[in-house]
Image 1 (tube, rainbow, N blue to C red):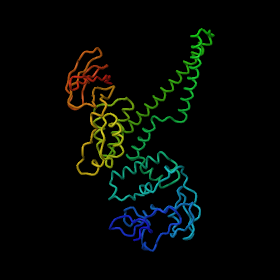
Image 2: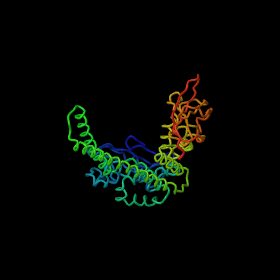
Image 3: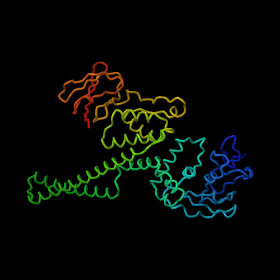
Image 4: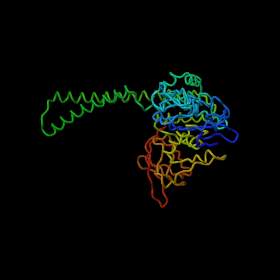
Length: 423
C-alpha cells in the first residue's frame, strides 16, 4: 500500500482503508492514489465510524513552505497552537485562524478528551473501568480549567451530566483534597507579610540584646516597647497559622461528610471512597490504624486498570510505610492475580508505625517471627509477646509513652518509642 507515502495504516485485518500520518513539513507529498476513494484519513480501531475520523488530524509545519500539500480538506490542517489552516486549493495553505481561547497546551482539550466526551472510545478495547478513569480524569481537568467549560458547550454539557453522579462527586473531593495544603494568593501574602515583620522586629530586639550584653545601655522603656511589639507580631503570626490549620480541619471534616454520603456502585468507586476516607482521616489525626493500613494494602495490590487512580494513591502510602512494590505486568496481564512483591527486608530501615497509635502497631524491616518486649516509661517490662504477622496490639494498655523492644537473632535488641493515644 506504499505506506512510506500514504502514512501508516492502522487497525486490524478486518479493517481496510484506514490511514493516518503526521506531516512534519508542508512539502510532504502524499500519494493519494494509493488510498481508495472510500478510505479514511485515520480511525481509532472503531470500525467505519465517520464521527471518529475528525479526531485524527494531519499536522503541518507553518514555517516550512518549500512544497505544497497534496491533500485539500482544510479541517485536517492544524498548527501547534491549535489554529486551523485554510487551504483554498491543493497547492496553498493560508495562515491559521485564531486558536481556541485557552492558555497553554495542557489546558487545550485534546482529541482523546473529545473522544471521551462523544463516547467514541471502542468498548472492545476500553472496558468499563478504563472508561470510568478517562471520564474521571477529564472531569478533574474541567474543574482545574473552567475556561474550557465556559468556552465550549460540548464540555459544559459533559460536566453537567456528571455533576450529581458519583464520578463527579469523587472528582470534586479529589481536587479539594489536592488543594488542602495550597495557600491562596491572599493567604500566602498575609502569612508572608506577618512573618517578615516579625523577623524584622525580632532582629531589632536581638541587636539591642547584644548591645546590652556588651555593656551598652539602652532606653528601658523603648526596649520593652520593642520586645512587646515583637511578641505581639509573633502572636499575630501564630494566630494566623492556627486559623489556617483550623480552616483546613474544617474543610477535611466537610470532605469526609461528602465522601461518606456517596453511594458507590462499582469497585473503582469503592476504592476511591475508601482511600479518601483513610487519607483524609490521616491528614486530620496524623495517624493510621492497623485496619486502615490493611485496607490500603488490599487496594494497592489491585491492577490500576481495574482499580482506578485510588490504587496509585494507596501505593504511595503503603510504599512509604512498608516499602512494598508492585509489578503491574503481573497484576494486570494474567487471570490469577499475584501478591505484590516486597522489597528485601534487609534493605528496609526497621520501624514501628503508626506513631502515635491507637493500639494497633505494625513492624517493617524485621524477619517474622520475632519476640517483643513492651516497657513503660519507667523501664518496667509489662508485656512479652512473639510477633508472627508483623502486627502487635497494645490497645489494652493505658495511654502513655512506651518503648517497644524487638529481640533480634543473637540476643541484640532494637528499641522504638511509641505514644499510645486511644481517642
